[in-house]
Each structure stands twice: as C-alpha cells, then as structure tokens.
Length: 202
Length: 204
Image 1: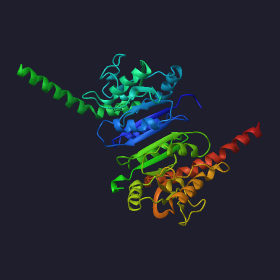
Image 2 (image 1 turned 90 degrees about the vertical axis):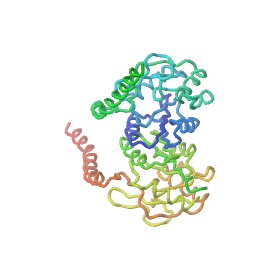
Image 3 (image 1 turned 120 degrees about the horizontal axis):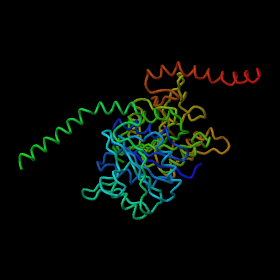
Image 4 (image 1 turned 45 degrees about the vertical axis):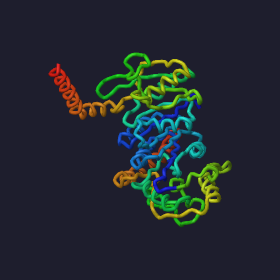
C-alpha cells in the first residue's frame, strides 16, 4: 500500500447531485482510501458533519467535498502525488465553476479566495482546527486559517481538481453550461437592475 | 429512545469496482438526516471484512447496515428497515435479499450458514455488544461469525419477509431485465477466454 491514503468527507443535504459527486470519487479510489457521506440538516453549510467525521478519519490526508461538485478526472492521483512529495504540508488546489470562474484567484489565504473543496490537509490529530462560522466568515476559511497556524503555510497548486456545480465529463459540462444559461442571464439582469436603481438614487 | 432517533450507518467496503457507483446511488437516494455512509477501499482479498470491522468501530448511527459494492438496496428498503428499527428497539433484524436469478435468501427463518447475507442485517449499534468481522481460518464465513457473536450478545434476531437488497443485480426493474441478459453473455465470454488462450498456445 502506498504511504498516502485519503479520507474524503462529503456532507450532504440530500441533493440528487450527490450521485455524480460520489461517482467522481469512487472511480479514483485506491486501497486505504475512505469516504464519509453524512446526511445532515443542521443548516450550517456542513460544519457539524465535517467536525463529526474528522476525529474518525483514518486516512493520512483529509479532503472535503460538497454534494453538488465533482472531482476532475485524475484529480486524486494528482493530489496523492502532491501529498507524497510534500509530507506534512497543506495543499490548496484550484477549481472551476460552471460559469468559468476559477478559484483560487491569487495564491493567498484570503476570505472568498479559497474554498472547502480545494484543501488537502495532513490528518494530524491535535493539529486540526474546527469547522465553525464566525460572524460573516464561514467555516471553511476559519478551518483553513486556524489549521495553517498549526501546520504551517499551505502550498498553492495550479492544477484544477474540482468542477463546482458542474460535471467532470467534458460533454456533460457543455450540457450543464447550456442548461444553466437562462439562470445566468436572469442573474445578470437582476444585477443590472440594481445598478440602474442605484444610478437613479444618485 | 424517541422514534426520531433511528439513524443508520451504512458500511460499504469496496475493491474499487465500477458497480460501487450504482450501489451508492441506491443508498443516497434514500438517506435521511443523521444517516451516514462510510466507504472504504481495500484490496486485502478478505471479502472486505477487515474494512467492515474498521468502519464499524467508527460508526455513529444507532443502527448498522452493511452493503457490498456490487449489490444494491431495493427501493424503499431503508425506510422499511427504519420502520422496523423504530418498532423493535434494540432488536436485530434479518431481512431478505434476491439474486439476479430469482433465488431469495433467507430461505428459512433460522440462523444457519449460507442462509443469510451481509446486506440483510440491521443491527443496533451498541459498542461492546457487536461481534467481529473475523474468521481467521475461513475468511468467507466471517459474516456468519459476526452475526452469531452479535446474536449471542444482543438476543435472538427477528426475521422479516421484506426483500431489501438485490444481489449482483439492480434495484430498477428495467435495468434488472437488461442485466439478466448481459450477465450470462459476460459469463460465457469469461469462460471462453482461457480456453481460447489455451488453444492459441497449443496451436503455437
């Protein structure tokens, strides 16, 4: 067995997209890896189930996934190679949304610039912070900044390992993009309406 | 324990087979708040028993269910088992499962080797009152060892008629019909393969 094994923690609110999420994980599993799927309705963006699963994880590294996102093909082997090359270090990879936005934008620990799905964290009990919301700052940012204080600065990596709210398969991704077009148009229309309103006030 | 407190930990060892995606789909479409699924990948060639043992020690649900990576829960199975767990707190339930060829286990409602299957157990998760998934001499019967030891600690099981799992099969009737055709074909191909190879070697 290789030295690196993953515990992948997936809280879910019961969305049907979970099926695709799990398929994107299971096709890349290696012996020793494990997946925790936790159905939860505490409405805290998955903080409670993540805190419940972390002490039970036996993998050498922790990954966190949301139930409407998918791992890119070849993502886990890529993360595994990173973990082997940088033992004990936190890695932060990149992800692409269905509208083309890519996070992280710049390789810095900033609120809104990093996200749950991007973290690969060595599973060292006692050196892991908790997932908890602090005011407007949501759990993922609190967790990663506090854990970085204990484990050292993260290494930012360029590889895109996650597709957020879309699909890992190229053809499906194209379909999602077309299907969601009306939503995007509506969203931008609303924003321009706000802008128009502000202009009138001014 | 109130009625709402029944939560399941569903343990799925996998060797990395592709069928595990459909297995998980059959589970996730039936989950309720508080339930959890733990998947562990292992290629120890022990039928997933060491993985099951490792997951069982960490399960938090009030009841344990076990699933194999090429089987699927029937539609509504988890709700059926939840209703059972609520009506019979602290009791072990043993349900039934159906193979692709139509065979159903349990055949008779008794604890007997080869009469039971892993996906049919619904076991209250009482730490210290669970058997171990271990059978050093005969790894194939570790599920039997587990259920016997657990029954000794928790009391006689209740046998239920409902079919909760489809073995090497599919929960959807149409997909099951397709599988009934493709599986014998795949088996034929599998059987013919070594012979062709042998023939080729002899020809050489």
